Amino acid sequence: MVVNSLAVKRRLDKLLVTMSLHRLDQTKYRNRGDAAGVERCERTLEFDRRRIREYCAVHDLELPRDVPFEGAA
Image 1: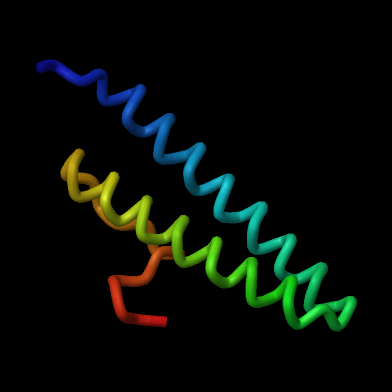
Image 2: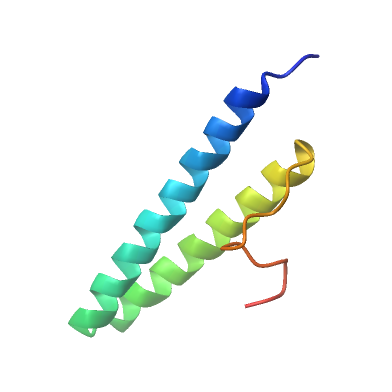
């Protein structure tokens, strides 16, 4: 199956934007002092990172610098 490399990169960009938005949410919760909100965002961010790592592995892409290897960070 031929995969359009532009579409693959576009999807990766969307995943990275989603992760960035979740980081902003985490910062907002942290500034409010909402520990439960921060924890929820951390779990969501780990899910985002896992999804990006898997996507990069499937499409043989270099892992973005904002996404640590599994177990790191």
